[in-house]
Image (cartoon, rainbow, N blue to C red; front, side):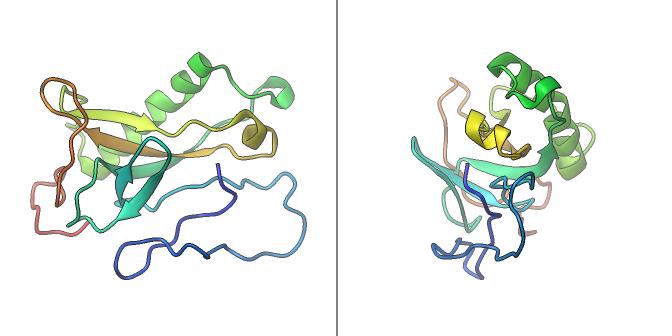
Length: 155
């Protein structure tokens, strides 16, 4: 995980050189890399980045969840991480999309994992996203806002 927030330019991209500047100690501060709610996300094996929603994308950010600290500050196991994230992401998806949202074959909830070193450094916030899939379970790209009733409303 990077140590900054994503900032979108007017064209929906993130500037390569943008870092939120601050003064003081970073130790103990949440340095999570998160995306703005409604950001359309292009996913590849090595990165996830925001794009304009009119461009092909595989996911949309539905909210950011701050995870509680663990006993001793150690990173949660993969299973514990998923358990911590699952309920919070479902709540955020329902707040963003509507109370009737349910995961299905074509809409899956997900989040990026937090690297153990980042967790120890204080990064405990993740972006919850809904990813798009075909009926046969393959990732799919979409254009436009597939989650809202009125696709003319920009995400």
